[in-house]
Image 1: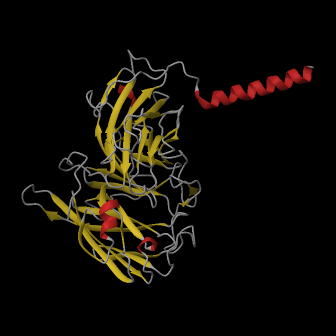
Image 2 (image 1 turned 90 degrees about the vertical axis):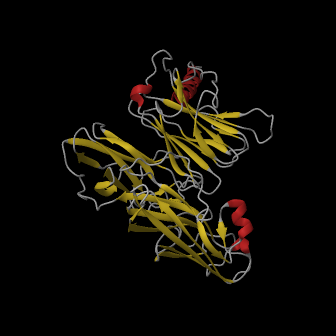
Image 3 (image 1 turned 135 degrees about the vertical axis):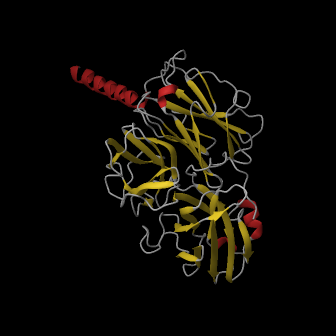
Length: 460
């Protein structure tokens, strides 16, 4: 199979690997009866313009032996026949059979859609290890198979699949599943939020799917796996009301998975922190991307800015930020603006233009001679279906200039990010430090002016 070009450095031996993307067309080993032209053009795989059956098989080599959580996102076709089905298997074990039904039965109960646009998630867990006799490292494989059945000859009506992820759960079973954590003197409050609106995520809620509000039913709570190296020390469900007790002065890797969301990975979960914030991105459709900024309690306010090229070459680029919340007919938009510390601040790219996108982060009212990057714990997660999650940390990736962190550049043609350098991300004018203090005060001022006008009218 064709392997996609890596967008991250190799995983150091013994470290927990980040979630790995599964691109079904890139990783295919065999196919029969699928729409090849459509797959080559879009990366999405569907049954061709015929009736009967079709199939696609593939394999992905994963960088560590042990247990992995895997999923593929499956989508209903336009005007599809409800009797049409897609069956997904991982390593020979069926993960689910789904009907071509975009809305019927929402929210999910017994294999029905997760969201109002007919998105299903086929999930499974695999385990195994193989020794690479050159590197002496252990790894495993996920072998996937997708099978279509349809009596409808229209290719446009058939269900399709684009990809998913494999999330590492450890080489060994969790040492502890106690609901208070593995135990210890360090007390850490957990916060699990949606990246596109900052809302707390918990089982049973209706949340945004990143495009529409109240469109995604949460069928279970998020699951947190805490790893020391590649050994799981704790695993369990978490919400924004979870408090864990852990060993003091330790650093672990945290992996979070939840149906309907891309997996979250943080290799630097320190128990000296009083709060761990996990902000999850809803699964993205092909051809899109999302960036999510998180940081610590200080500074209180960081802002994301994304410079986006125009579709017409030579036209001026547009920069999305808290004042200009969308560009190019909403193809790039600011989903969430946070002013109270931690984040998330989130930008979604629904459609890419050719050219370079540049993401920078500004410390609001920051002191250029004494910025707070050293204590900020700022990190940016770049999400895309073909790459999964790629993480950037201040002080390690990109560069800082005073109160501005130049984070990453994205090639609009390949949709591939890379850390900023002074050559690829040139300096821009610093944001206006004298701007109004955001919507809340602006709203207060408007309310105050309305009240003052009403009082003047009464006085007359």
